[in-house]
Length: 197
Ligand SMILES: [Mg+2]
Ligand SMILES: [Zn+2]
Image (tube, rainbow, N blue to C red; front, side, top):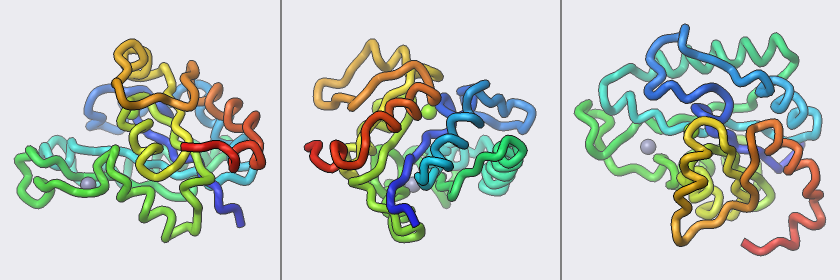
């Protein structure tokens, strides 16, 4: 069993960022997503989705909608011989009008809560893992748990790349999830373990 994972942001990384995804017919895979995830599967990584879904706290959709979205994503991946080992989402937002979700939490990225849960559930070691996403929140999440952080230019990524935060540097900035997978493959375990955060 591998203790290494690739944590994937969903919107803007695996599928197109359509704002708040609120209907199933707006799920649009990037053309390389299935192949990239299958490659990570075969390389022995756990592949784990970690996604902020503040639309729940904002009342745009509910948890069953997000769960059904993930079932549909999983079906599409399965048809291409790929799989995600687990899906985690943060439904919260401090300013959300839906009272049940209007809270400060530790799972909204860049908070570490989702990866900490995955580490317990799946037995993965975040410090030997990667986070791939299209915002600095994803890179910040990587920093928060001691993982490598890769920014992709899809979704909001290209815009975010042009506005780097002063205190955060990505381990790599690449065009898309396929490039991120290739970057991960070229950083073997021994070298990886010697890197400092
Ligand atoms: Mg995103
Ligand atoms: Zn949360």
